[in-house]
Image (cartoon, rainbow, N blue to C red):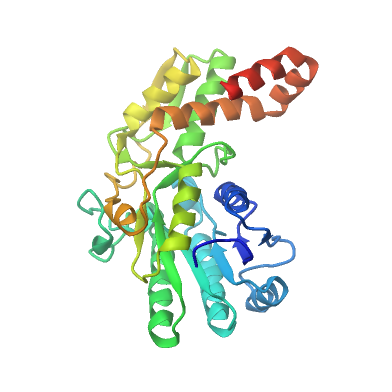
Length: 335
């Protein structure tokens, strides 16, 4: 496979955060037949509905992005649900891929949450099994890790052509900014923007700020995923990321500066930090399919914050009432 032209492609989760960018880039790469299943019609936790999905979409290529995800708080509140829904969706997708004889390739997406809590940095793919994941997100991470085992087992026994990609933490325009379920970047952006607008004297942030994370801009993630889809054929997992990490404390300062907030940051040290460090070894992706992320963190954060400011209902109403704002935004996007 060296092109998407003429391929029937199904993207589960194609209307979600990463999925929208994957679908958009598929179109830019020649795909004209992309099917995005709706949750209301296809419940991927129901095997019969997954069978119906394959029968209706008739995919030659299936990219499985649908997942139940969230930040530390959401993981702590929903360990059973996060395990059950993620592993069940994946099991159903892989099992029917085996039975469906016209599928040329299956793309599965994993998570850095699957790596052991104390993995040496940078995280190498070979380290995936050297310990138990960090406790707050272990059910989600173990579920995703188990699907790698299933995909590899099906490749050995049934010849299923499946690849497995481990993505760093995603962020970017269109992210989930709900403070109850969001990840750290959108949560911080929302907190600082709203604190500035309301002239609040302080913003509360979970943890100590002394742990590190790696963040991958969503457009880069979509690009890397599609590079792998076209060019990677092995059952071994591959990391997709930037290969760099940032302390949460420094991330907070970066977003606070971009938001123009000058108040105090209050660290909630009674709340968990999560895994001590996260940084991926991304050399395999560059070696196997020549992928390297292009968006630096500052640029990506600014784009994300600008999108958030402009996407809220009150912002859209302001622009509609003031056409000059629309002209300014167009000029900025063209620059």
